[in-house]
Image (cartoon, rainbow, N blue to C red):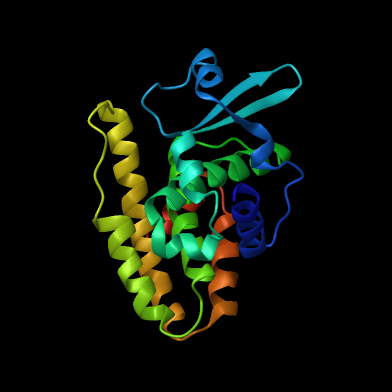
Length: 208
């Protein structure tokens, strides 16, 4: 599933990463040893060494188990929450790996905001076809309105997730007219443009 998700994101954004997220997945014990948050269900762990960044991706085993026998498009209808959590982890991995290759710094807010966009884009493109506009409209509500935040988040973390959610919502709403017209080429062109923006330029663009 992880490779399928990464491949789909790469296709959407017109890029290719030499590293595969599935090869960097670690278990809970390793995540804890690397300083991971015990209550996280999905977490990208990043450390900077002499030779560059070192990445590890923790995904709660139950998430992967729920998706193990499904194709991505099937997961949209039967396991959407688990699919989106796994997609968020792959999104983080791909974005940080690409930014490292470009020698570009990434803020936590930028990474989280891109993940919000990625989940919406990924699900919409997978579902593309008849009535995708109605489906995408419902998806906006499910991804950006019907959400809650973990009680263990500190104020700074909570604010970051809230802002990322708001930015994802604003951008998804801007994409909806293109989606309703069935213009996949224009949707992809727009997504690729926004993806390649960095730092404050990306956050300002998503917030328009």
